[in-house]
Length: 137
Image (cartoon, rainbow, N blue to C red):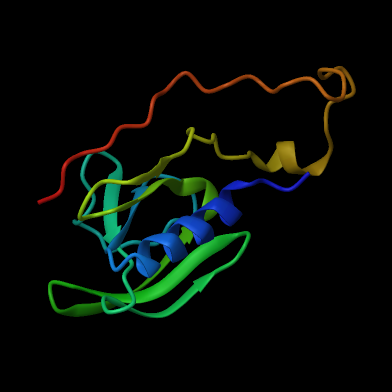
C-alpha cells in the first residue's frame, strides 16, 4: 500500500490555503536528497513558507515537493522528498499535522527484502526520535 503522507501533505496544504492561512512545512534538512538553501536550516530542520504568494512552480507528487523560492532576496530551487516533511501547519493558528520521522532507505534496502525478515502484515519498528516544532514569529 502507498504511503499516506504525500496525500495528507497535499490535503493539508489545500485546506490551509482554502482557509486564507499561510501554509508552512517543517522539513528535516539532513534527509538525503533534500535541496534547501545552505545556512537557513537550524538543528537539521528548516521551516518553509509554501504559500502561493511566496513560491513559484510548486509541484507536489507522491515522491517530493519542489518549488522556487527566495531566501534573502536570492532565488533558489528547492526539492523536498516526502519522507523529509515532518509537518504541515498554518502559520496563523498552528493548525496542521506533525508526521512520524522516517528513516532514509539504504541502497541495499531498496533492492531485495531479507528472507529472514518479519512476516507479511507485521508492523515495522518505529523510530525512537521524536519530531519537534519550533515557534516561528
